[in-house]
Image (spheres, rainbow, N blue to C red):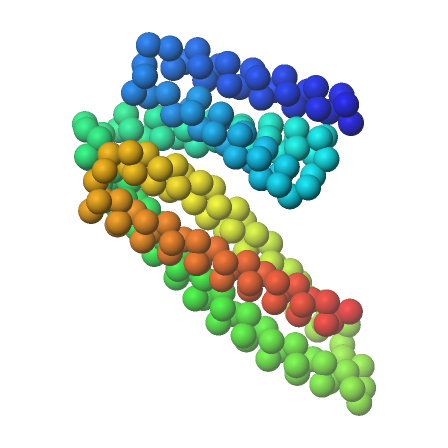
Length: 214
């Protein structure tokens, strides 16, 4: 485990130094370094509060620092596409709104699909009472449930990555004291968090459905 600690620390140091080198002389665009440092510090602190041991804290800190640096680099790259900070904020708020609307549609569709699967589960379980349900039918149903679970995991991961970016943009916008844009982005961040929570809840229900067929 000590070797893992050393490798992760070296990786984190290399990543942060790379970000620093890329940001020298470009104070307005050093989000990658800031994101890496902040991500590492926050996750390391959270891990300590959670009562993890030193090895676990090192792993958590290194991982989060890397994620923070990636998000910071995303901010930097996307900013280059706009003529001004105002255009950048307006443009990315629109992107966030569009992304969140799409994911909300996915969430609602998933909820409906999970409800349908619950009905199918009940029918299959009832069928198993007097006789024995066809193994082929059960296998097909389990496959459908597991496919939904896998897709939900992929969508959740995508939303969590986008949430990290939106929160980083939120933090940057907060520095500008622009209350109007700040409020608009805050609304989108809250929407995305709500959608993620709902999709994770459906994942849990899918897991229960799968377990019930064992």
